[in-house]
Amino acid sequence: MGGITTRIRQFLRLSWLFLGRLAALRLFALALLLAGCGGGGGNDGGGIPVTLDLRADVRTPSQVNLSWTPHSTPVTGYQVQRNGAPAFQTIVQGTLVSDFNLEPDTQYCYVVVATVFPIGPVGQSNQVCVRTSTTAPWRLETIDAAKAVWQGSLVIDAANGLHVSYRRSDGVAYATNTSGQWVGTLIDGTAGAFGDTSIAMATTGAVHVSYKDSSSGALNHATNASGSWVISTIDAIGFGSAITVDSANRIHVSYRATGDFLAYAVNATGSWTREFVAGFGGSAIHTALAIDTAGAAHIAYAVGSGICAVRYATNASGTWVDTVLTANSQQCRAAMVLDASGRAHVVYMQRFDLMYATNASGAWVTMSVDRLDWIGFPDVSIAMDPSGALHVSYQDHNADLKYATDRSGSWLTSYVDARGSVGSGNAVRVDGNGAVHITYFDASNAKLKHATDR
Image (cartoon, rainbow, N blue to C red):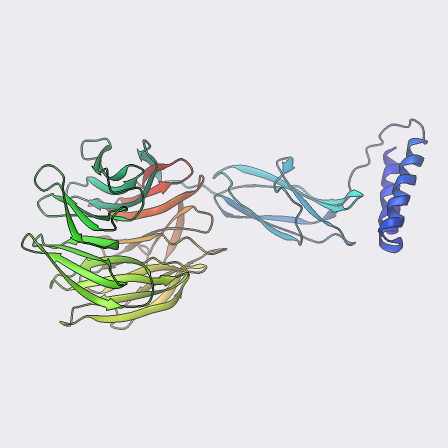
């Protein structure tokens, strides 16, 4: 029966090509009748012929790229099988496809089947087995799994203790591992579940957090300097804030104020003084703030909607000077760190690329650090270790958490976590022992997590 079936398929393929669909369907019915009258004979082992040459390339711990040679005659499409089951709900048009949302360090075996409607399979590929790459040596742990969490910020104290501010479904929270295990505290239970938070630490060990009140839109400041959390208002409206504390323990905050202005506030004497830095027509702003050794402020920020500009403003000259780093960022976020000379190092996502810009040479120089297969997510963070090496955390196009560093003299990238949708709200810092720490949100499991390479 198997030999007859193979000959029927070959006959039907030719019928489909030369006689048209209606004639082929009629011949299909006739062929079934003839095959049924052929008597016993059994299955002679004839299967689908191997007509495709398949190649599988591991792209990330959660992605495999597949390509194959086309079938020798026209087909309706191709079915991709992964470990013996369909990898996709529909057939694939063309001879290229990416298989996403895979598990790291796991073997997957693929076969591609060429199909013609209504005949069915007319050819198949060789089987190719690959193992996705690992996320080692990163060690992962959960900080908070009690509530849905979002948008964290990280600071490390002089004793290498970690302090995180983040948004929970019941408000703004703070967690620290200074006791040897993670302990969380709800700072503001009325602030709502949405909006960034930013954290900084004074030389006294006091923690300072800036955040937006989701209900009123107010920009708030919370600190435990007195031994318990005290909340005050910085401005009636404030979005996308960043907070830092200088060597004299003055508190500085950058944010978007009423009227789509970039604003800057300082609390040097117990009360806030505010000033406008720049105005613009866009409505979405995320800010990053640093203070140099001379006390000048440096702000990197993104403005726009959909397509955004990444800009840099500083008052180092005595007046605010605003510079456009790019006008074509598809993701509205930026992160920044200053080196010992007060030069800025900025990272942001621009379509398929993680971009790095610096004025360390005296003029702005921009380069691509990592090229993705598709548009990456906006969340990025950057830190500098005592040797001057840079460390960047970011989220790729698969919603995986990645890490890049130029510690070796050139940029090298690796994966930190690739299980599910991870990496949003990421923040990277380096402790006094040189260990890299990244906090981030695991959206698949509604957890705030911590990763370290030590």
